[in-house]
Figure 1 (cartoon, rainbow, N blue to C red):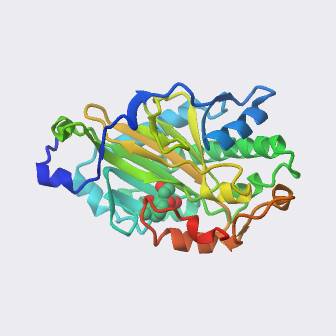
Figure 2 (spheres, protein in one colour; figure 1 turned 90 degrees about the vertical axis):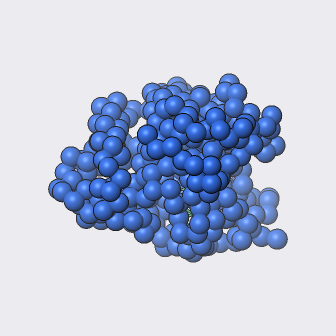
Length: 331
Ligand code: GA4
């Protein structure tokens, strides 16, 4: 086990464990059964109120999840020197503590991949130094199932908003050129947390996701928090049998701010490892992102039109906690 000295801990971000940042589990997270006839209305409500919800009856086979989780654990259990032989994230590859290129750090290690299987094959080869068939197979199966579920949710959302055609959002993820990302995170336990005198160590700092929708699955270790509209942080109890869904910045724009892209973060745990897998469904790079005309009727468009390429370029220059949409808001 790695024990860090105080100065070493101080390089990581610490947050006060005040009443405002409660660690009490929040009972109000919408739980949506995707197989129920009223789910589309509940999905719309959850996207408007929180930009975050939990789904059951999601259709992702449990063996896809367990296969990928055990492959990920195998990889993260390798000695650091082995893992560091693999390529640094540029942004894709194996990363340790550094997030992005602009100075953000967190108490985690991760593998970041595109969802383009050909590209990943080469990347995984350099990550593993061996033929990565088994890992690649597990990643592909999982991504296909997560994407299918994300598309189902997006279609129900379009129906709930009475927008036609119902694939108006999902077609962006289904497009062959869809610029989607997949991330496997490992948050090692940090035994020195007690030393922090009521402060929490940040595993992954607060941010919103730039894409359309994110599908998150974690093991049974706590850590995820979301910010409510009043700015208070609430802890989300882990649930390894459900998926957590985040509205991303692009869906906030497409819905002219009706759906909220949720600010979230992960706190480190003192005892247990947290492993999470996240599919970030994004549009093709050339796609124009602007509020859908049917959602601006009688209202002003809140955002300037931009392409996903332009947004991504500006996102990759930002710090994790920045409000990336600010630059694209109409004054
Ligand atoms: C946040 C959501 C996804 O994890 C991610 C992250 C990306 C990265 O890790 O390279 C970014 C971050 C995320 C937004 C701002 C930039 C880019 C780190 C960072 C500081 C993969 C993504 O798409 O955007």
